[in-house]
Image (tube, rainbow, N blue to C red; front, side, top):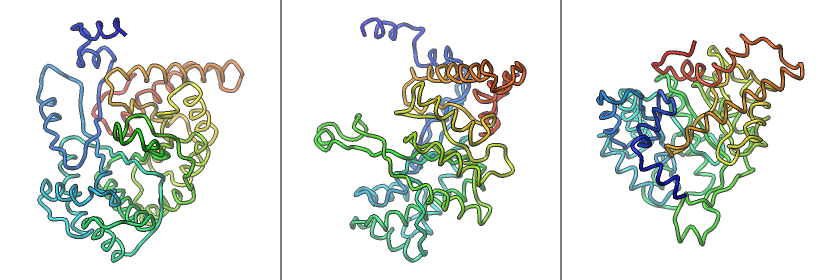
Amino acid sequence: WNLCNAKLQEDSMTVRNIIKQSGVTLICTTDDPVDSLEWHKKIAEDPTFDVQVLPAWRPDKAMNVEKPTYGEYIAQLSKVSGVEVKDFASLKEALKNRMAFFASMGCCVSDHALEYVMYAPASDAEVDAILQKGLSGEAISKEEELKYKTAYMLFVAREYVKLGWVMQIHYGCKRDNNAYMFEQLGPDTGYDCINNYAPSAQMADFLNALSATNDIPKTILYSLNPNDNASIGSIIGCFQGDIPGKIQQGSAWWFNDHKIGMTEQITSLANLGCLGNFVGMLTDSRSFLSYTRHEYFRRILCDIFGTWVENGEYPADMKALEELVKGICYNNAVKYFGFKLDVVK
């Protein structure tokens, strides 16, 4: 503990130096629609730092109509966007306004945290009525919450197609399970767990609703529950399109960020999908010391490939293996997200 803290005080261990020493070429942060992105602008204008730092659109607060603070948040969104949100149509306009701003700052990816990928279609009138209840602080039923979030996710997904953005969905977490500790420490303090309720049929129906109007954006699905690997692998096969690996199973994350979790996810994707199109690992962390996760992933990936070759399950074609590893570890992500970076030759 003392040694590590002493090391972190050295000039070589500043945040920027850690980023450079880790070989990072681009970082996507997670940012709320009301954020000013002022620091992204300052970093982009700083000639002493050549790592790209781009915003990623994280609009959960605009979706969570069941939260007591929803009306307060929407007032913020109205102020920042210049659009008074009084119904679902004006909410869409406010969000489109902020999406355009994020796009102007280099954003090309969204991230959504859902309990699960739901599909509960509702009429425009129903959605408006639910929004009004949320704005006035009235209690929202579970059925109303699911209907509202379905309408919201369908809307943003269609906007992402127009913008060319990637839609990431993380689901499968049950949060703040210890009420006593929540009162003591607040949210996001280590009392979350894996949720085993994730109806795959609804996820398929959600994607199908977008497919019906040719409105599926590039999508990455991450479940916190490793038991969902096979269902995701089979569902994404139903909705692939003109882009290689358009619908992806995301890498193992959070409670699965370990050798077994990563191995199971990689193996399942290889069994049911096309592993060669996989965009690989993401840091998925607010810690500047977490870039080693990519090295851990690369070692596990290469160990899997090596084992397959030794077992005669994959050809000992070094050139093909090299292309696979470079693709999964770097090049596929550059191409998939459309980052302005050179691929590794």
